[in-house]
Image (tube, rainbow, N blue to C red; front, side):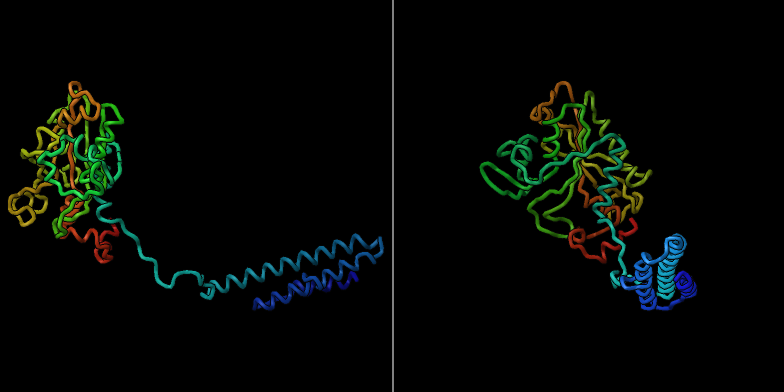
Length: 339
């Protein structure tokens, strides 16, 4: 019987197979429940005691060689399939995976936030559905104030009034109510106004508003901050100018223009041949607004500014139709894959 086991060892060592079926048949022949090894292990009890040690060692050698042979043949067949291409993953998509891209508004918003973050501005967020106090009254717009007519509002409920926020200044009010000066915060978000949709306007758009409140904050600080932003975003050669304007929540107030980065100030259709392009509004925070939010206006001053992300994006990428940002046209969005 010992010689029989040695013959099986020799057969196992010589065995070769080119198909998975042949390997499986070999495995069943030697390692299956009714295979050679189980039969030999069953006969172990009939082996004389003085032969059991050698018999057992030889039998274990046969088992080990049979297992190693099966694994080696399976590995060889798998490698052969991979090389021939027949081992493709059939769970993979039949269509190639397309490279995703960020929306141009997200690209620009993130770039703006990063620039102001380097100046110490933190992000603050608030609800898109607002009450009258945070959207209007706290910002120096009491009932019947004519400036309320400047913003066509989507009202959800009347008396008490709830509405879709018309600007992210409401976030600044909430932030000042909960935080003491010094304050340096940036409020990006979506806003809503009841306007006709066109190439230049939409009822939904995005704003980024900044607020800085501390002791001895001046208009010069505001101007220098905005100049730094303009040169970081549009290029080191960019210049700014401030034109007097009116906002109920700032005094004095100004509109900010940048030198046209298309014609370099010489005049083109983008800047309407003036050499300047408007990008945002700003001003010193009205003392009434500070007091409404629980901040001592005799001790603290501050500045605020706000810009439309769509407008900045249109300038950056020379996009002429604002509606493209909301249509999710893949042909348009694919252009920003590498951005």
